[in-house]
Image (tube, rainbow, N blue to C red; front, side):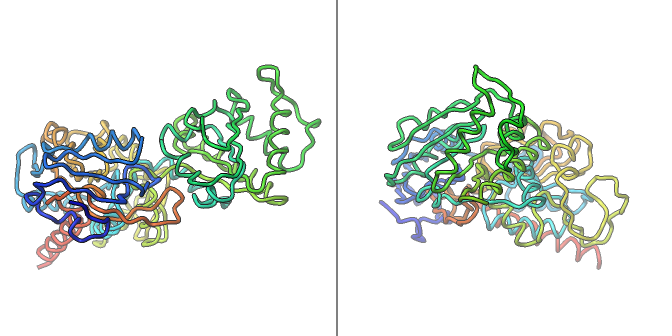
Amino acid sequence: MSFPPNDPTSAGSRDASNSAAPITVLDWTCPFCPLLCDDLAITAQSDGALAASGHDCPRLAQALAGFSTSDALSALVDGTPVALDAALERAAEILGASRHPLFGALATDVAGARALYALAASCGATLDHLHGEAMSAATRVVQDRGSFFATLSELRTRADLLIFFGCRPSEGYPRFYERMLGATEFAREYVFVGCEADPGAAGSPHVRTETMLPHADPFDLVALWSALSLGRLPSSLGTLRHDGTATIDALSSLAEKIAVAQYAVLVYEPAALVRSHGQAGASLLIEGLQRIVKAINDKTRAATFALGGADGALTVNQAVTWLSGLPLPLRVPAPRGDDDGDGDGDGSGGTSLDHDAHRYRTTRLIADRHIDALLWVASLAPSPWPPALAADVPAIIVGHAALAEQAAARGAPTVFIPAATPGIDSDGHLFRLDATVVVPLAAARASSLPTIATIASRLDERLAAFSRKARS
């Protein structure tokens, strides 16, 4: 039995008892990587196993291996199985009593993000994504300096020179080169700067690959490159030597390649830069790269391309920015007017929306005990909540069924609600890697699990009922 991706009979609302025969969804879109590859076929076997064809992607294979017939379908309150309504009631009690709740992870789709924002507005929550630090490093540069960015379509059809700065895309995005190249046949050149060449790029047709300065200090490299791009003469700059080759000479050679290219694109990965240099260091490097590209555009065409957006990061950031006018992380004011206004950085105070990439980081809020409840949303993967979360802070875990065991082990006060995974248990929409295209997702199997949007909306209804009762 086969269903096209938008056939209503393939939606996640189908009862699982109707899935005795294998179900195949054609032209299925993978939700586990922001490339959102849409050229796949996925089959749900009668035993619950999932298998996708048309790919050689370890990231997808690993994600599908996390789903089985033994997935937890029951909600838990303090480790005890309960009905969904009972879990929602307890979760609403926690949020209703909280003064400083944090909505963390936020691994969901467009509908889930919209519903979570509405819920945050009802209880005065702070919103931060699982990959918030990496996103904020790039967002800060856009706010301060602006950005020249390319789309995947431009990479495929126009870019003849790709410069990879300190990143190897296939490590996190296994099908990057395959999806980027498509069926195009014009000659390209890949230059890996500040890192070794990506093994995943080997064998790409019509592509010449080169490595430059793989062990150079990235800050020195960007500073010298920026000076050259702004017109400084090589003779006026000191040199840092590596393996007998002057950094200036190598960067001058790169500048010559850029000058004759039809369209050069500089690719970087914010998360990799944050891991190596921290959020502040990553922002400085990204700002330098944008300055270089701006200077290049005075004479020819160039752009940047950021690798990121996993676990719905781009999706949630786009949805929240559209709804609020501000990006993540974000504090949404409580409607009850009880903020203390002390300005102590704990996420309280004020009656307006507030974006602050430092104050509202998940790790900081939890480590400094500036929250009194955590709503952890992880529907795309079983991403664990931070281990620094104090045992006495109430936690509401909503998402992947594989988190049930960990939630049960935490004990009181913990609520666990299993949720549908978009693209597996339900339909949905996610933003693609280049943040310009919203891609529809089709459910791969029948499931009775509620979506994040449904859970958030039902929690919001219960909070409203509590508020009415308190006022009466």
